[in-house]
Image (cartoon, rainbow, N blue to C red; front, side, top):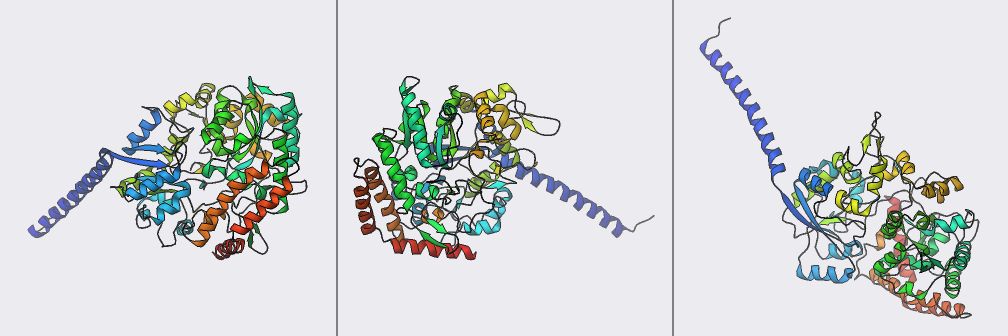
Length: 555
């Protein structure tokens, strides 16, 4: 076949252009990929948490691996034993912030002070991050001004929930107390304190230390378990700030419901029987954790994540009998406990990128990469062949040596890096057969248990430790958790001021009520009630909560 000159040169030109397009595409792809890999980025982060249990040593193996894969290093600082208010106030006054911030209870203050970059215009450029929440959930994360400032790190479930331990609030009791009593089923607060009191009589010391019956953490913002227990023992879920009538959709403060008075009366009795001592009201968080690590404390009321570091320490010390299991106690038999709830989106807390950050896209890219499956495996399982293995069916498992390593705090500090306070999933990996947390892989959970724990679970006929509590209801109420509303209140607003005064008056009066002299409890309770009602405009507060319930019910 013959071509004329014009046709010939046209064909040559098209071929050259096509070839050039391919070369340019490969060059651009290579440049983009290499630029991302070669441009090393460094950021700072502040988390308003103690950092206990999340310490890492220099040259941590997984940290180095993640830094290598992301070409990003993040220097993390924690609140430690400093006052949150002082740290945040100083940041705001100087207008100087770390690149990433989770301000915990100070999040609303940071937002109002203009500390965070709005994120909504960036999110769709980062597929892992954007798909982390649904479109409706991202809409819920918007602040009153319409912007999205924070990304929640917790309670985001991929697939189905896989909990083997209760990570939320409950009454916790040492396992040896249950074994000593013949594995009883303890359902009421009175039974709980009676059991601890009887054990205390026969075990005045544990490991050469004076046995302590019961502790309540009261230090700063962590002291919510001093006041929020009435909602649980009356059979309500953890809305935190109030109880809600499901039928009328109205909120009511739980401070003076009949169950509250009876509970604090029982604490007053426990105080006079020396099950509970006065130092619990002035103990710092660090002192609290140190006490629990000794194995000499029989019971606590708390969120598990607050004392998880102590629980892990007890296991490492070879003291499984001194570790704790949760109990869903009520004030009397016949009340259905609701300590467990399916995971819910908390719109009041999260990690944000500050206005001091010089590379917002680099910071978002880092979070996006952390949410990828390969790095998610690294964060929680470690490296294949070193920290875990894969069987022929694709199921992850650990050898005895690997399990031993994973239970050693020293080994973890050198070799694991969960970046737990950055966004992550709970539940399942994308393969659908492996859990994100090794301790929630059914076979791995049971294989890693010490014999003492296996004996305890078998005695009760349970498979995991969450079986000590009722199963959660299939679906949360649309307003749940209501505390995500009060956590976000403008502290200068009328309702915000009431909320702050609520916290203050509870911390001021409840220790006095609990420590009231014998025969004086009713008088002290009445004095507390008078002070409370004189200083708190209950109607304004409850009406604001009820209005929020109505708004959330319509969404």
